[in-house]
Structures are given as structure tokens and as C-alpha cells.
Amino acid sequence: MKLKLHHLNLCTTNVAAMDEFYCKVLDMQPEASRNATRDTSQGYSGKVAFVTDGQSEVHLAERDLQIGFKTGQAINPLEKGHIAFRTDDIAAFKKRLEERGIPYSDFGAWAMKGWQQIFFHDPDGNVVEVHQVDA
Image (cartoon, rainbow, N blue to C red; front, side, top):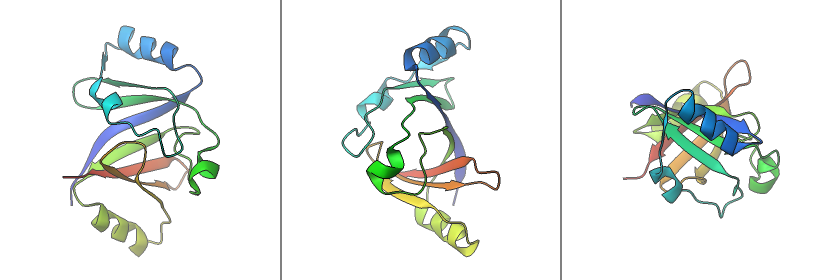
């Protein structure tokens, strides 16, 4: 099982200002292809800007405090943001969490078409995402 840092999700009340900042100040570029893979039908339809440095991405997402209620999940990845890793074996990673007694919310294919997403907390309460892209 491989894990690779994929993106950092920052939650905001002003996506346009954040997008402008990350592009103009930090020289990041829009990752337009991500908008085509969004799924807004499962509880999150907030604004999102996707930017990249060519290797890693930053997802600038409109804060939504109601995600837990909308999805029935214990963890809200769009309250304060999260860090995300991509794996090639989500089942093996879930087993790793279970063996260590770490609870997680299994969102399945949720906000991004073709991504199987789980979310859990690190020891300090930060939200961590691990996802696998369907073949």
C-alpha cells in the first residue's frame, strides 16, 4: 500500500479572495480539471477553487458547518479543513486504522467523482483524509 500527500483543504467564507491570494501571491495555478470531477449531489455544493504548484494541490473550499448533519457522518471535513493523502489500497488502509482502534468516517464516493474517501482525526484532532481513485 502506497500513501502520497495529495492536497491540503483550507475552509473559508471567501473562496474568490483565497483563490486570488494563492494564485497571485504564491504563484499557484488553477487546477480546472478538478471542477469537472466534483459531485455536488451528496450534501456539499459549496464553492471550491482548486490550485496546484504542479505536484500538490490546495483545495479552497467554502466552509460548511452542516456536513455532519447532511451526510450522517461523525467527521466534518469542511469545518476547519483537512490534509489529504492518496492511496492505492483504501481497504488495506481502513484495516490499518481498525487494527489501531482509530475510528473513521467512510464517505465512499462523495464529493469527488471516482474518489473513495475516508476521514479520521489525528491525535490533536486535525482531520485527515485518505482516498483512492477508482480505476
